[in-house]
Length: 326
Image (cartoon, rainbow, N blue to C red; front, top):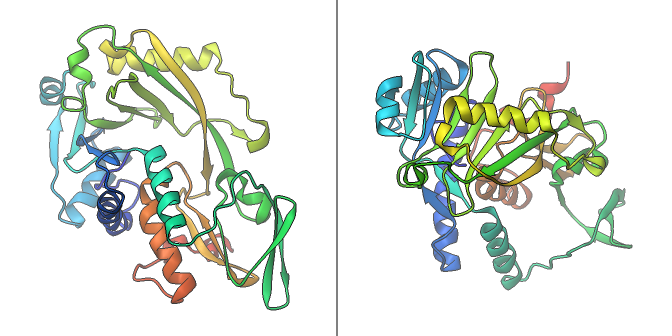
């Protein structure tokens, strides 16, 4: 999910706007039109909650196009949703869906066409400083480099052990609508994030041919990435069924698929993008806390600038490791 009225912090808005431009560039360069689907987006919750207030603040501060929709009007316009009477929605017309598999494949292909060497199925065991170069142990050999980016997702702590990170297990479901399938098309169902009265979050995406997607956002268990339980319990499934029953009732049909994914979280749920504390030639990139992929185009550009020019056009203070030092 990509969205412009960013409730987490207005500092992300210039980043996501640049990301939109770079996704469009990628589509043109890769001669494809399937990287991004604009559906619009709704941030729904009790008036004044963090999700609603944060989205509204980002929109107003940055002059973004948006609309505040009260509960009954929201249901009339988007029949898939059944918000409570005291809920409101912030509509972001530029929100939509990115397609990660196609994007990753395009990035890899274009990188190789420009001379990059991609090492597939080559686990990284560690790295060391050896004089004027870095020695990276990967796939049974040692690769030497002047500079390095560490962007290992849930495994980043195995390469930089002192990072204040936790890996959180998240559960995702896809359902065939039980009725009114026309309500769940991308043309009639925006992507959505919901905040409930107890402060918990979930999100939905329309049916793209594989069912309506629903996922719990945060509140998962902390896990080790190499020993994640990929089974989904009856209690976890029942919780998702109850969310659908209450807020997206016509979507509660036959379950098509379910999966487990991982969030790599910082204590404040903001990114880490900074140089290694003991080696300035090593850049740590942990675009974590469940909201990283949409920014990967702009984070790649920032990373390239930092490694080749030493600076970035963006203010990266919020993402510094120094914020964790007391």
